[in-house]
Length: 193
Image 1 (cartoon, helix red, strand yellow):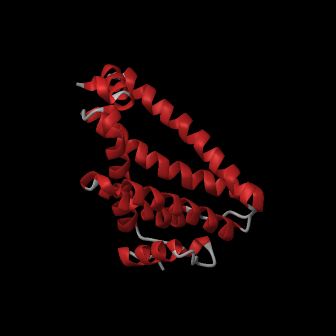
Image 2: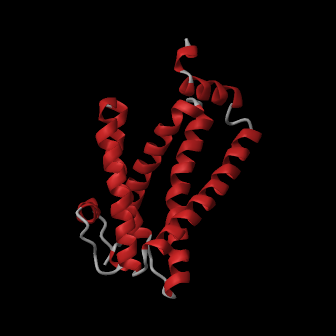
Image 3: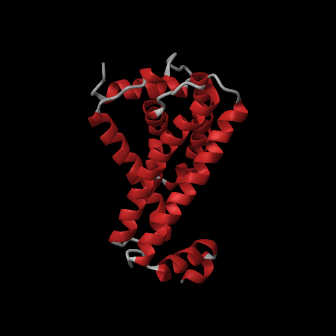
């Protein structure tokens, strides 16, 4: 049965944060409304993180949202494919990835409370380890093989995001001058005034 409320996802995410996992990855099933709400939240979070670099144009906002969606989908797909190569079984990680990525949502507090950066950085590190441990448990694979999956994810995500970035630049949806100025301001804040 597919759950269509956020409580099931919230419960799974909290249990994952406590390193209590379901016995099978297929048990992390959520309805389309839950996926939409959480994905939009994750996309907004990624988009807001990129605005200081990309600027606030419509193209920058669209690129940030697209990158957030791409990051989630590439991670879930690569994880499923790589773990299948190692175990021989197809493990549906989509729901598990949604639940563990939802643990990142408190990072939205950085927008209104910048002083929370250190605790939220520690929280993000914990979420990474929780996600990693769950993948090891659900796939019954060793750490090295799960790290290979993460490495493949990083490579594929970088390739896909580079393609999107090139597309947005070539279409004029992103302004390279603004990006260069923003990067200079980030790395050398004294010259920004």
